[in-house]
Amino acid sequence: MRARLWLVGALLGLGCRPALAWGCKGHEVIALIAWAHLEPGVAKQVEAMLEDSPIPPVLPRRCRADFAGLPLMAQMASWADDVRDATTARYHYVDIPLGAARGGGALAAACQGDCATFAIAQYSRQLRTGASPQERAEALRYLIHLVGDLEQPLHAVDNADHGGNCVAARLPGAKHRTNLHIAWDSGLLATMMAHAGPARYAAGLDARFGRRFAAGSQDPAAWAWQSNALAARYAYGRLPIRIAPDHEAITSCRSRKVKLRLEVLDAGYTAQARPVIERQLDRGGWRLARLLNRLLAWAPARLPGHGYNGAGPVRRAPRRDYAPDFHISRRGRRRLGFVKKGAL
Image 1 (tube, rainbow, N blue to C red):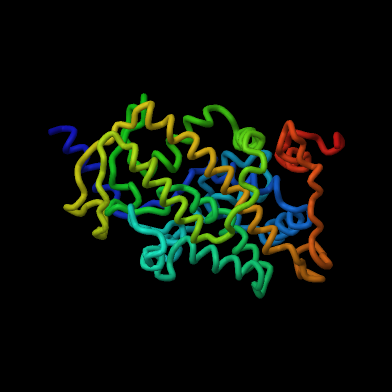
Image 2 (cartoon, rainbow, N blue to C red):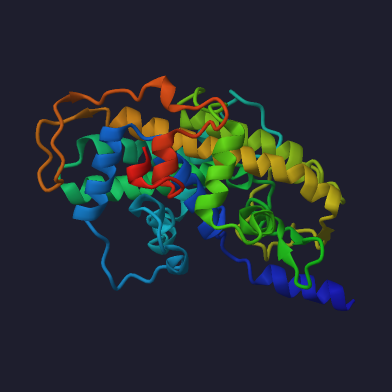
């Protein structure tokens, strides 16, 4: 009875859906991988935009403790969570029903012009055509974050549980209980990273996967469907207590439909989740890099207030930058702080 009462109390505290995918360090890892693979001219534009249109210094930053030594792009990786409100909350996820058939209109029905895929398209246009440097910098900050959000499997699924927020869970060895969504947001990743900082962890992933995710779809809808499939197969499909698909919407975790259960995530569950998370982080970095390289490939003759003048397309980095024994480029390694500028 005591455990049941705890579950009721815990779920009552989840009336709204948090959207803090990957936590501070996960978003920073994605941004760092993307930063390492930006074309040189695009990297200059990104840095100039963020420097010339700074955020208000009074804005509370959840992840400020992690900023030391990180490039501005990584420091801005969690900004969209810092400014999230009722208007932009749904920009961080898309509630595709668990088990929905791809191509059957489920994504459009889940989005309705107010979800992560819509927001990425909207801010992509704003980055290209924004009327002011401030508008373009805002779009850039949103894209840095939202592309990463969509790589978190539970940000692209719903099962009458607010993307797993209503499913109580406990990680191996943990004293306190959490929920399935938070476990995938940051709990599992915190264990995986241990004492490694974002820069070292990003470099490790980039070295391991190389250019595996350098190609692929550039359609955010395809990204959402891929994350939805991963959620079905791994996040839900490997739970100790299986949960059947349920497509009836709920307004909050207070709903009587929410089943009171505690998922005790064992070592087997975390072992199969780890490679999924690693791939999604690296894939998210490459997707963000490719998106920004495409959007900023043609620089205007003059960017007012941006301190970077471009003329024509940005030159592509030569393939020889990618050493066969260490796949991250030397330029990327320098951006991540593993090679001093004078050493190249």
